[in-house]
Amino acid sequence: MKIVEWHIITVSVAMFITATGLFIYLPFISIKKEPTITIAINIDELCRVDVEEKKWEYVVLHHSATDEGNADNFDRYHREEKKWEHGLAYHFVIGNGNGSGNGEIEVGERWKKQLHGAHTANMDLNRISIGICLVGNFEADNKPTNNQIKSLISLVTYFSEKYNIPKSHIVKHSQVRQKGTVCPGKNFPYKRLIKKLK
Ligand SMILES: [Zn+2]
Image (cartoon, rainbow, N blue to C red; front, side, top):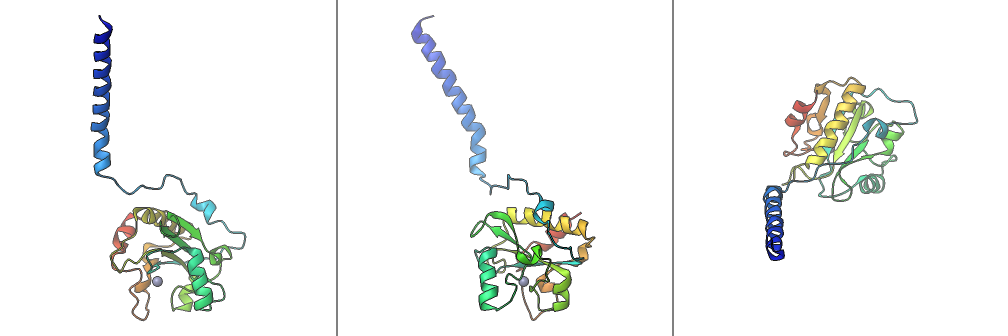
């Protein structure tokens, strides 16, 4: 065979491989999904504290009612504007990618010190409930990101197993008797979340 023919064969094979590759790759481009968390989170390690643990009985779910934010922002707001001594009202904040990582779980000081929350108007409930806030305004057009839901499910599953918290004690802020709060918003997939819990 002549050198020229070899070149033609080589080029043809290369073109075939490229075309096949593109064909396989194309569907992935067209249905570009939100990336999911690739780093495994060790919830047990994340939630470990140096003080004596409280016997938590409820989990109350919130949204931040802001498009962006993180634990530090909300802590400053609760400390400086609300004048709450212990700052950040929640025990955990789950980011949406605007202000902190998408699905990132931030641990608040109240959790580290096993202090009561300030996330509902009911002080008795605040003493026995874990407050989790997802960054976002789910009463507006937004809904939680897939990563936020993934992190939330991991966190809530962990607590329900550890403290024996039944599904009926995993509640939305709006379910707690409160002066008309819509928190965590109409787009919060509460039923889907409860269904996914074991
Ligand atoms: Zn709330």
